[in-house]
Image 1 (cartoon, helix red, strand yellow):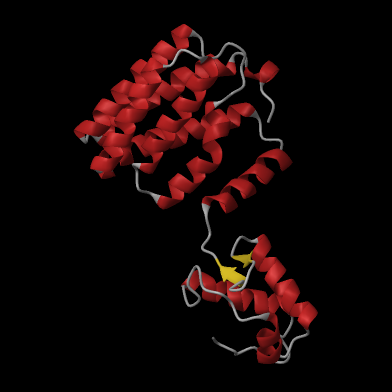
Image 2 (spheres, rainbow, N blue to C red; image 1 turned 30 degrees about the horizontal axis):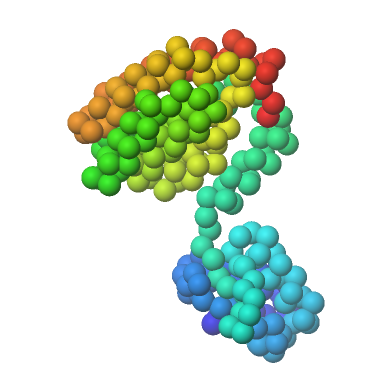
Length: 237
């Protein structure tokens, strides 16, 4: 482990930054146990309190977790979508983001994901997407339908194989696809959704990105028109 920490710079911020960089670079691989507090104190000339504070910072950032037991210690983690989700959640709530802005987001995001899915999907993606679509077409319960619809959209997003867009979508998807509008998943709406995503799925299977993009664009525009007319009275961010 690199120990180039000058006496002038030493402090918990410097140690946290150094360990963060080593984890992100892969110098400390995910799953590896970090040196214990005593070793870090000796190595960097810091107090035990400073070392503990540095480790708390990394734990709060989702880069370190504590493993209990005989082989326990602080374990390095790779960043996951939870970090993106938590940051977006705080931003949306803190900024009081309006529901129409979320609708603009889904209208911008989903067609691009559909196009990328048509371009990058593999056989496993197609099998999962087909299974989700088939299940969705058999559901009549509104709550179960919303959950299955979200699963189909998430599966479609993952078929894009774009890690950044997937992380963003996994963070926003549940909020975008369950508008909490009374009566939203009526029989007519369910039938329209099943038809629309079936058409998108056909384009993804055929490997036609622009067709998938256009069909998803029409689907989300219809969704937005349906929801926005009633959302201001019923939606809570």
